[in-house]
View 1 (cartoon, rainbow, N blue to C red):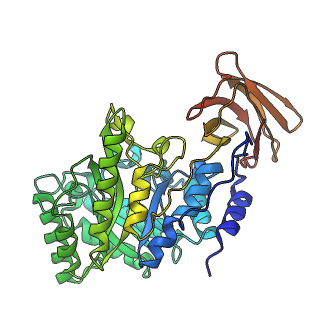
View 2 (view 1 turned 90 degrees about the horizontal axis):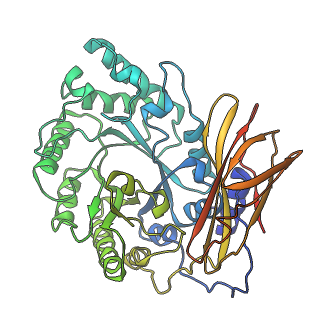
View 3 (view 1 turned 60 degrees about the horizontal axis):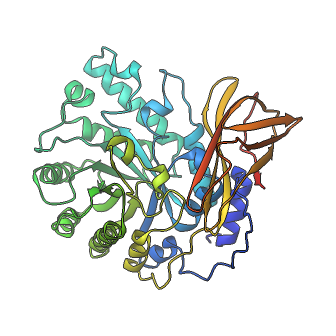
Length: 452
């Protein structure tokens, strides 16, 4: 039985040391809203997922991730370069954190991704491997990573982005070293490592019927005919405002007719900035169109958004001048796109109110053997601050060594930080971030922050 929303919130706080405190500024109590997206989706037998960053699963970010979604995809934590940066040396910290969070919140996890041309460690890409060596490296990696989470993950994106736009195979380490059959080999290895997980091939610009999606279709058809284990196809759906393919539902259906599941795996819909009401209205219509196309096909298992908040989106850094691609804005206020998703799932009679509050969220942005860099983000929505002070207590002996954009002191385990002269004001809809370095030994748990 899935824990109640209140139980999930308490679990999240206990597990992650959630770091947000409501600052009461004469706000009225929030009105009752629709059920969260995860409940609406579950009622239709669908997955409503989001990609997440493990270090951010605290405070408001963690609350929304746990409340609204019934599936999580690690954005980067399970990629080869993240888990095995040096040959034979593994770092599972963020991946384990996301899996633990999902299990505490009754959520599925989508493993992403095992075999890809990008975000591989330099020791792998710069090596000189015979085909036999390269094939063994791939098999061993899959056996290690999939085996670690055997029985705990619902799905794996086994092979990611194997095709060029014209439908030819992408020239990659894997294709050049092993030939096109690297895909079948990877799927076979993943099935051996976890027979219960659903195995997918995932790609972008394959949402409509075109040369690339037809190549993927022919590959899946061939794999099925050969008896290679393949359970599903992931359509990433990194879309542009107003450009949802008219053949999306037709394309989903033709893959489903091959006897495989289909998932929208990385949905976001980007626009030229700044956003305005007309663009947000169009974006909402686009989100609804994607949702409706999936809902119309029984074997479309669900939709995952690639980050639910604009503050955690990859778009601005990859497509300069574009952004606002997700269902929540940078301050965690739901956009018209959120309502459109809810409406497509049978809800949408009310819109969740924005936070009528200011919050402080602590996160560790990088960590090494004896030190770490962290930050605290203070954000307001429906409220404002003319000055601020935050405090927390370290539980494992951590010590601050440096701070910037704030004045910080530490007495024993207690840390207090206050605004600088130039960043005292946090307007309604705005935010302020300050950073710091520290030392740690043994563990570095996230503390609970108070804002005053």
